[in-house]
Each structure stands twice: as C-alpha cells, then as structure tokens.
Image (cartoon, rainbow, N blue to C red):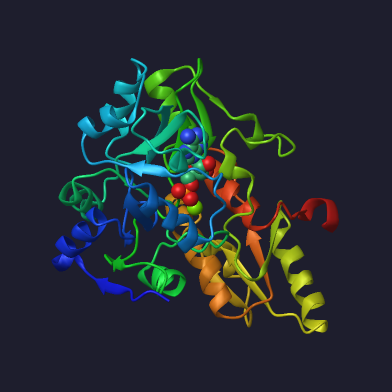
Length: 344
Ligand code: AMP
Ligand code: MG
C-alpha cells in the first residue's frame, strides 16, 4: 500500500512537483477524474497500468495545456486538425494522430499513433501548466469499474495505490471524451463521447464511426475498446421499448420471489411509476446531458445500495444518446430486453 496524500487546489503545487518527480497524481477533468503521470517518464507511466490493473495494450490519452506540447508529441498533423482544435479545445475531444519519437511506446500500446486532448477543467489545465510536462492519464478507476465522476469514487478506488489525489468536486460532463482518429484518410470516431458526430460533422464534413460501434462482432480499431468496461458489481440489464415500465415491474416481482434485490436506473419520468424499489435518477428525460452526467454515478450508487440487478432505461441512439448507450451497453455486457416483444 502506498501512502496517498489527498489535497485540494490550494496545494496544487505539491501535485505538480510530484508529477515532475515521476509520481502518480489523480486529478479532476471536466469529463471524469484522471490518473496522471509525466508522459515522457516511462517508469511513471508503467505505474499507471499497475495502479489501475489496466491491460498494457490499452493505450493512454496524453493531456496537454498548450499547442507547443502538441507539436512535441505528434509527427504529422492534418491541416483540418486546426479547425477541430479551434472548435473543441480545450474540451472533451481526443484526437488520435501520428506520434513523434518522444512518445514512449508504453503510452500507445505499441501503435504508431498517440491520443491527445486539452482538457477544459481549470484545475487540470493549471496542474499540467505547473508540472511543465504533458500528462498521460486514463480514467482514475480500477480497470473495468465505472469511470469516477465524484470525489468519493476516486478515493474509494485509488487510495493506497497513488501518491496524490487532487480533489475538486463532481465532474461536469460525466462521460469520457470523444476519441476521433484523424491519422487516416477519413476521420473516424473510435469512441463516442460528449462531442457528438453532428458537432464534428459541422466542422469537418467527412467523418465516420469505427465499424465496431455499429457491429459488435468487429474488433475495435482502438485496442482498449475490446475490454469489458464500466461494470458495477451488480448485473445490469437494459430494458427498451414502449412497455419498459410494465416489463420492469414484472421483472421486479419475479426477482423478489427469488430473493434478488433490484435497483432501477432511469429518468424521473420512468421512476415516478415505481415505489418501494431502490431507484437512481438520471434526471429529466428532456435533458440528455444530465443523463450523461449521472450515468456512472448511478451505477456506483446502486452498487453502494447493494442491489444484485440493475434495470436500466434505454435512450435513443442519436446525439449524446450514442455515447450514453455505448457506455450502458458495455456496463450491461450487451444484455438488452425489448419490452415490446415480451409484453404484447
Ligand atoms: P480511458 O483513458 O480509460 O478513457 O481510455 C482511453 C481511450 O483512448 C481508450 O479507448 C483507448 O483505446 C483510446 N486510445 C488511446 N490511444 C489511442 C491510439 N493511439 N489509437 C486509438 N485509440 C487510442
Ligand atoms: Mg477508462
């Protein structure tokens, strides 16, 4: 067990110095909390994989605070990258580009590309600036668990495994960044996120989704995407279709007979039909960004309440709904029940 020092922004200098010295620092970003190390320090980056229990072929995103750092990390930058940077940085868009020789292989899982993002969280930007180096950082959770969006989540997962935890409240986006590969002929979304297909299309026109996002039998181009992700301890089942509430009600009854404790995760509109069941609200159905923000928190909250099964509402796969369903489907291991087939 490591001694973990938990601090806030008033002690950010200590965290920046720790990064310079090759130590591990958990820090807030606008998407989720990150587990950071100096991207140029191979030994420090190795320790990220150990602390998280992350498979070594799952590459890391490098976080930067200014454009000069981008030049150090990349080889070729396509011309249109500048319009994406102008539109979305700092912010939750990660760009995958050809890597420079300075980037250690351990960061890229042996690929010749590197994933880079400039976060917009003021504490993240300040930390990167003060440390003076780019920071490699995956989400600050034990590998496989839902990404951490609250202080309690990072303390729960990584206390005793890292040198510093820098806390700054809940994250505002709550879902990880969109990963866009701009190293090939046509830009490809490898992981959907807060910045949507439509947002990017408006800036660069030509664009597609990596095929694995629409066909789960295809191996993802982004190596890490093949792993099981976002899993709470409870089993998650997505219930979709217009009879979702009725289907959930009958499932709750069946589970109750077997002594299985059920939790429901959905928008207020769905939840108001239930009483005497553990529920976690994803907010107002009309505010899809609120659903995104609460998703991981609810998965963890329901675990805290020791439910065995989580029944989750389904969302339209458009706009931000694409990212929400991507995370939810992985959390559920693609276990989806169509209430319309069952209830007619
Ligand atoms: P995490 O930091 O845990 O949110 O995960 C980072 C995501 O970025 C994973 O899905 C990685 O597979 C992806 N990624 C990082 N580097 C690359 C790269 N060079 N090429 C493709 N995907 C990448
Ligand atoms: Mg992650």
